[in-house]
Amino acid sequence: MAFQRIWHQHYPDGVPKEPDYETITLPEALTRTAERFPENPALNLMGTTISFQELDRLVNRFARALGDLGVGPGDRVAMLLPNIPQVVIANYAAFRIGAVASLNNPMYTERELTHQLNTSEARLLITLDLLHPMAVQLIAQTPVEKIVVCRVEDYLPASMAGPGKEIAPRDDTFMFSELLSRYPDDPVENEAQWDAVGAHLFTGGTTGVSKAVMLTHANMSCNTQQLRAWFPTAEDGQEKSVAIFPFFHSAGFTGVQNLAIYAGWTDILVPRPEPDVIIQVLKNFRPTFFPGVPTIYFGLLGRDAFKSLDLGFVKAFLAGAAPLPTSVVNQLKTLSDAPVVNVYGLTEICPMGTATPFGGPEKPGTVGVPLPGTDLKIMDAETGTKQMDPGEPGEICFKGPQVMPGYYNNPEETAKVLKDGWVYTGDIGYLDEDGYLTLVDRKKDMIIAGGYNIYPNEIDEILYEHPQVVEACTIGIPDEYRGETVKSFIVTKQGADVTEADITAHCKNKLAPYKVPKQIAFVDSLPKSTVGKILRRKLREQETQKA
Image (cartoon, rainbow, N blue to C red; front, side, top):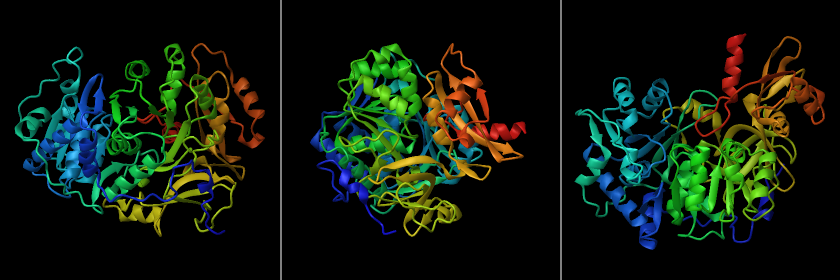
């Protein structure tokens, strides 16, 4: 099959098929934005704002601090922070001096962080005061030699700020705010090189041990520019995005943090994305872009306070990290006529690969079409050598300037996913005749029962259509007769009166007999990652332990 970019026909007016990329690194983009929109708020934490001019100067201060702490070009600086101003300042300071920002999940355990810090070989760790005791323990188990401690209270409004956790003096520990106060804010020479690695983002671990994805400054800048081109009617210096996606996750890193800095938009920071907090942010700050994962929208749609909001200020809902079920799209559409833009990608491509055309056909159930300058092909899942026709599922593969150079210090895993410039995602999907991508599932999540290939995500979609189902996740479990059989885990609405027979009858009306779950478990909650992705792997592990 000849390679065709059939999706270009559905690009909205003003979206280029191939961007004319600027060779500008992100720290240079910050300085330019500070010159274009000096007084515009770059960051907003519960009402405390930092302008772009101030942010650029804070980055200069902290860049000097990093240099005096022994950090130079190519050195890894580990971040262990939620969405607070310090993580943006530290990321861009590391970029500016040519160091590598290595992002870590502050919800991780000591065991998980030991693995990641040993993988990145970071010698400096920037973290929260609440996590300082664990950080001290990590010094003994990792290359980390020095710790910089941040307090959320430093940037909260006075009415909300507390004293913060007391930190005992240590020779290896420095306070972020004190470091900033020591240095001038005049310009620092940009050491970020276009083709050099600028960040390590860790894969989510949903498919095994997390790996450090190397992203170059070119990867990060080009993917940011691709995403900016997707919204031609949005205005530089005018938009506001609610920062629910954590910046240590690739979707928040590029789609919220970096996009806003490149375009001069305001990031409204949400350190803990709880429904009541998000509702207050929507009321008080009226963001024009509203990114979220399915579980965020599930939680909000269950609140009358959310459903009664006037969301006329929202220009787009942006759904990522997992496909947004059609039923949720339909509910959002009852609250606002704003487009629902499903975005799909993976950390290995920085992470943006496809998106629903902004202002174009939405096609609920799909994750849109490839972004400008991005190629996509579907290859057979067994050998990876045959390109599939439209409508035929196979492994999703991407090519473009956002594709990583590889995993840090892991050539074996790199060779498994990078082939002739294409990244083989391990995800199963298909393109329709218009070039819209539908996700079917992870390759390794596919259930083979009685010789039939069954994709759990398809079953989950049907389960979500049941009016009493809040969350659902389906896995394959061993079966002597079928090889594997289908088991679904379901969270129902509070007080719901629903039985296994009800669920089975619902599925029989919509699925082939071999796809209907043979086992159903009603549970109070499902295991999730910190960005709200349901962890199918964890359910499989639990079932294996029972056997």
